[in-house]
Length: 140
Image (tube, rainbow, N blue to C red):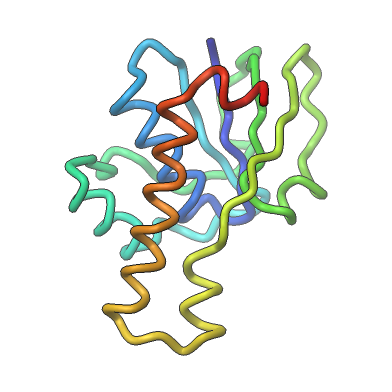
């Protein structure tokens, strides 16, 4: 199975989903990309490290940076990506699994570092549950 996680900036949610999949489900081919490239989010990297998952080998990229792969699933993790998901000329099943955007919530709510990290951890854990349930979690 080959999965592409797609998000707006490929900095947080899609990166966490890619890292969780590599960590928990190494038999699954996994990639992540953004509609645009925002760079790696340091707080996302931090909370994944807390969970024992290393994201140091990952980098922010766009769909144009992806190898030519026939994905089984293209999973959008935010509304913007779902609305702006590029066409993939394959039989990939497009699935939307929306998660809150930690950077936006921290900014909009003017959260302290501790409260902000709590948001990142919550979303990290929600994404982990989705990955643990693969592939069934993409069929529900």
